[in-house]
Length: 185
Ligand code: URA
Image (cartoon, rainbow, N blue to C red; front, side, top):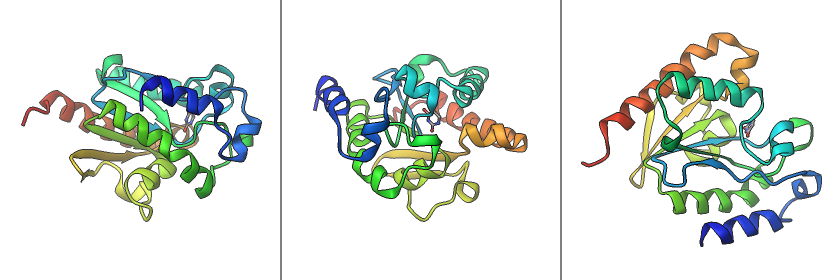
């Protein structure tokens, strides 16, 4: 599948009910050759309006963390498990996630990132292991089929509980260190 085909499929998608409440499909943003893919849950109101992931308050916090740790925009691509906004920002259902995951898998196949960072429980369960809780597994590297995975808190959780901020910073710092070490070996 090419990026064009993927984008067309997403824009025409009616696989689940979320399609009927959306203003825009939120596919992704960032470098399409990035070594790091960052995966969130699903678009919020601002993301739905703008058609881009993590452009609201949670996104500002995420950008601040990435910038302060020295990530550059070419280092990452950001996407969500579901590409259309769940009404009132509710958590997407397992069925909605399942219906949408082929698009995220296609993004993964096109980008082939070395590292996937999962923000929050929805992304962590969808990408690493259904049984995982982000509070228990955050900051730990998991390797699957040659790709490294790390879960950390969702930035929206940091807006509700400031004490989690330090943990997300620590986790993303590990990602930056790994990135700086390179992937030649
Ligand atoms: N929360 C998410 O999980 N994704 C976004 O794009 C915005 C907020």
